[in-house]
Amino acid sequence: MKILGIETSCDETAAAVVEVKGDQKDAGFLVLSNIVSSQIPLHKKYGGVYPELAARAHLEKIVPVIKEALRQAHTSLEEIDLIAVTHGPGLIGSLLVGVNIAKTIAYLLRKPIVPVNHLEGHLYSPFAKQNEPLSISPSLFPALGLVVSGGHTELFLIKEPGRYQLLGRTRDDAVGEAFDKVAKMVGLGYPGGPAIEKEALKKAYQKINFRLPRPMIKSQSLDFSFAGLKTAVLYSIQHFSDERLKKVRPLIAAEFQQSIAEVLSAKLLKATENFRVTSIILGGGVIANKTIQQTLKRRISRLSPHLPLFIPDPQFCTDNAAMIAIAGYIHWLKKGASQWYDVFADANAEVA
Ligand code: KG4
Ligand code: ZN
Image (tube, rainbow, N blue to C red):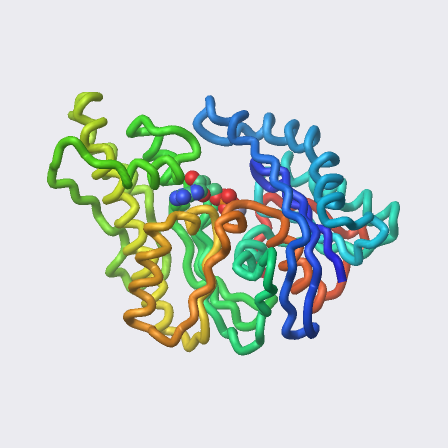
């Protein structure tokens, strides 16, 4: 079975062809092609995604991106068995581009189609593999699933593939959003995540005692809050000259990342105390951060050594369509396919 995934929820125009391997209930996935056309250069000068420009760029790129995904997978549209498209959450103008092209293909070629929740895509991103498939075995569930991206910080109990309970979410900023805003504040580029990660590896030319809070780390709630952390950075640096800021910036970057890594691991560990789970699944752009990955791995393996931790390969942490194809397969197994006229974009779609 071959699935065409289409993703246009934010600022990446993406298409992928994924082949299902193995038994239906124990399937693995081979990514035959994974095309992502990033709009980062377009939005850079605004320091964030400009929705109208994003939608126009999707319109321009979507057909060439799908064509290239099919070409690299040596697959024709006729050979596609299922179309999976992100229907939300996201920017409505952006979502409409992907949803409408997916519906058009489904209508013209009479193909089954499934609407996919973008967050559900991130939850299956560790199973997107380009060489050796990794099966989504029933023994991995119930699992904890944490999505840490530019738009979302949400912790789920995945009871089984396709069945979720939301355990906690950010009450204000998403982690990626905090990265982007703090990067802007300290004069680093967009997107902020990779820029802060790089800065943290540099040598600081002036040592200062710089400590940031670990928001909600002791709270019993599994919710998160990152707006205060961002404000703490702002207050700490407001009397710094540009020159001084530059000299201490690597320390700020490292402490900021450390705070986030500690909060995320504390919440995951708290959730493992409250719920019996057999694995932990991570996804989202921020999970590409190596320091955050290492802290999570270290802390989880120390306190729950038998709990396997699934982390996406770097190219599948940030937005892509391979993860949408896989989540589409899970959706199809559980609920079947839709008719093209029943698929709609929904900017505020919730994981159900
Ligand atoms: O998952 P994603 O591509 O899009 C959303 O669904 O939001 O995540 C994008 C976010 C951006 O905020 C970006 O700054 C952050 O992920 N990000 C990172 C890293 N790479 C991307 N954050 C921290 N460290 C990174 N290496
Ligand atoms: Zn995303």
